[in-house]
Image (cartoon, rainbow, N blue to C red):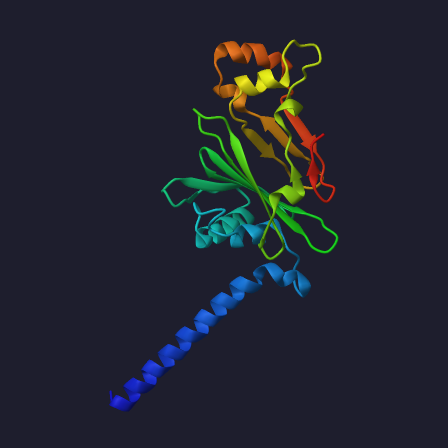
Length: 231
């Protein structure tokens, strides 16, 4: 092979590499905006593109495999997560997706209608055996830019979960017995509301659980009306 042919081969390889790089970046940046001229935004597309800061346990390439398994095989097939464990999609509709990330964590993705755009809500719930289940709630616009959670979710307070009308206890007594609040959130496809479940009692002493359980309102529900407000 002559020196000239080697140079041409190297040049072609560099051009091909640049092309693939530009294509990959461009494809990644436009997937969530296909609703303008292509298919509508879906929960599965969000799952494929969700930032690693939200879902670092499952690499994007693995997520695509999981989506293929779920749609083609029409069954739950587990894929390996970043720690060597098993992850699987449990439920998927156009506006909702739930994935079992690890044996003690789940991620729910819900598309919510808005006047000018769709709002994306993610619920990342961790429920280890020794600690009360707790959910991190996040909101994004249709391009996965983070939105302020407090704008779309008015979380219930401690007193919202307890009926103290016929009790000698006061809110101050609750605050003394419950040093922190853990709330697990769940939702579902379509018009299924957002449910907030108070889980802190699981960490208290048996005596305090016996005292507070009869007063506990186990869960509260809120419907989407441009935001979630628990009354």
